[in-house]
Image (cartoon, one colour):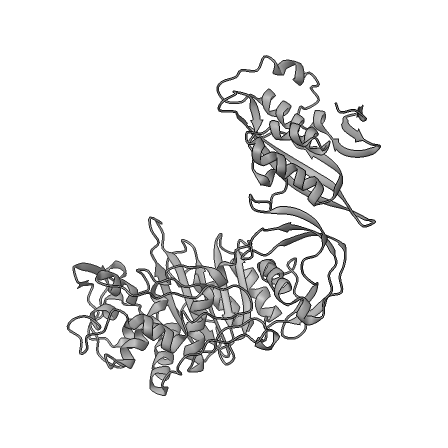
Length: 545
């Protein structure tokens, strides 16, 4: 032990006292060892090869946690399998976060993993508060030494820490905000978990612009401009400035609830007439906001753009007869419909409402009236739907991508496969553009806050706009989207989509639709058919609007 450090065992609590300040209290013997105080003596006989033993797990966990809480950085680091990384991290935890005390209570070991809770006392400029959380560590055998060691990863110190992140305490980097919805309802990450990373980014960008002042906080410094910091503890509040967003609290609440029905789902909702974003929700709700920044093949929801291209080039109108055979070939690649269905003597509307893949490929192929360039789908997406025009939403959001293609990949792009990628926000904007008759760039906060330049696109011609609404209404009332949209008020329209992803056994489920002045889109990972999983998510959001 270091000079001036006392060790005491009070009942079942192991306490390290340094300079008269308790820095660490542990229920180690009753929690990790189950009351067996002879572990240390047995450890000398522990095997040096093979899996770590239960005895080694308890001893190693006890020693590491005690060293960490006692502020013995080097000792704690040497008890891990990566002391070069662990040492600075443990030191930064204590000094960067201004931790003056810590009580760590382990739970019972589960195999080689030991869960524990931390109650860290943080003091800064005369203010002291406790930060409590749970974490865990895993014990492994060292490859070179054969010793039982803690498998090092930053999340041992705090579950949200990464290799590039650090724990900090001090004057907050951003001024405080009170984010509110369109009607002044306060938006908090506790009530709306999907908005957590969004609210953090809004604070970072606009806190000082809306009159907020800085407080004193403990936070996870992400170490990256692209990833917002995460506030863990507020020691003293700054004066929040009120930031009005376009979110509708009722629609947001419905979206949060809807995505919870699936293990991995995202949804976004937009007001077509303005582009105002009314809801963004993800399950799970993580730092990465998939609804805004996801990049996934949109499946047959892309037929909205393909149908637009066909009408703009005179290949077909909603009432035109188009062939829908079970299969079709394009430059040596064969495509088929679901279960190889066909439509005899059908129209473009029939093929749209039933989501016939072959019709949207065959009508544009070598036997069509015009030779459509491989780049034309991307041009249509940009020109008419604003896809790929660097949307300035107010927070990070990924542009949809419809890159140039050739051969069979071009045909695949017509049905939303190939290299096309979209987010739920991008696909919601497709429906919003159809409903409005023209593109309005989605946005979350007013452009006047920072003089952002909004993306613009050409309006749809009246004939194309009415044709798209006719086909989307047919899908919503008498097609693949009808079951999901059954209770959604008219006027309405929708499009389903299923997207094959790599080796994934089940396709992703996509769905987009509109009702009144609200449009939405959702994607459910491995959800299957569009109407089965993503459809109910969108319908619940549209009903809330």
